[in-house]
Amino acid sequence: MDVLAIQKRLAAAGFDPGPQDGDIGPKTFTGLINYAAKKDLGSLSILLGRAMAADFPKYDIVTPLRIAHFISQATYETGYYRYLSELGSGKDANHDGYDDYLQKYDFRKDLGDAHVGDGDKYRGRGLFQITGIFNYTLYGTRIGINLLATPQRAAEPEIAVLTACLFWSDRKLNNWADQDNVSMVTKRINGGQNGLADRQTITTRMKAMLGA
Image 1 (cartoon, rainbow, N blue to C red):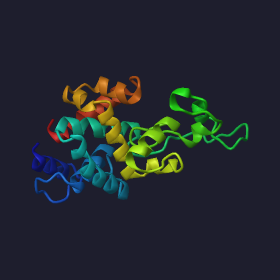
Image 2: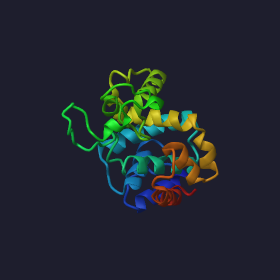
Image 3: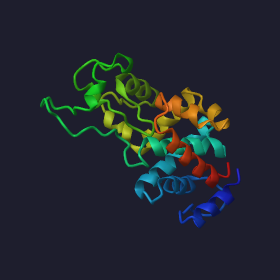
Image 4: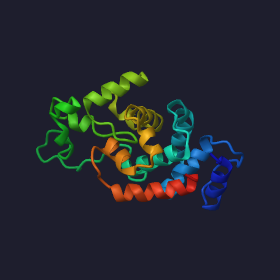
C-alpha cells in the first residue's frame, strides 16, 4: 500500500493526513474518516482514527480494499458518522417510558430481547449497529466490558471500532472485500441490500482515495 500517495491525495483534497511520512497511523486514519464524511468531524474522527490505527492490524484490515470497504460501510451505517446510536421516533404514545419505534425490537427472540423496553435499551449502537441483548452480551464479554449493564458505552468511538472489527472478522468480511464485492459485504452487515447504491458510491470514492 502506497501510504505516502494516500497522504498526498488526502492533503490535496483538503483533509489533513498528518505528517506525509508513509506511515498509516492515527492521523492518516483521521483524515480518511473526515474524507469519507466529507467534513472535519473534530474529536470524533480523532478518536475513531486512533482506534482504527490500533485495531485494524489485529484483524488484518490492512490492504486498500479492506480499509476502503470497512470505512465505507461504517460511513453508511452511521449516516456519515452522525449517529453511533440508533435513532428512535422520539415518541412515547403509550407513556411507558420507551421509544415507540425502538419497541419493534421488544421480544425479538433472535436478538435475545424478552421484555418491554429491551428494544430501546439495547438499540443499535456502534459502527455496525450491534443490536439486542444477545449481541451486547456477546461483544461485551469478548472485549471485557459489561455492555449489558452499560449499553450506552457501545457508542463510544473506541468501543464502536473494536466491536465492528470483531463483527467484521466473525463474518469473514476481509474475504468479500478482497473480491471487491460490495453486495456481499452489505448483506453480511445489514442482512439485506439496504442502501446498496449509496454504499457502492461511497466505496468507489474511498477506493480511489486509497488507490485500491
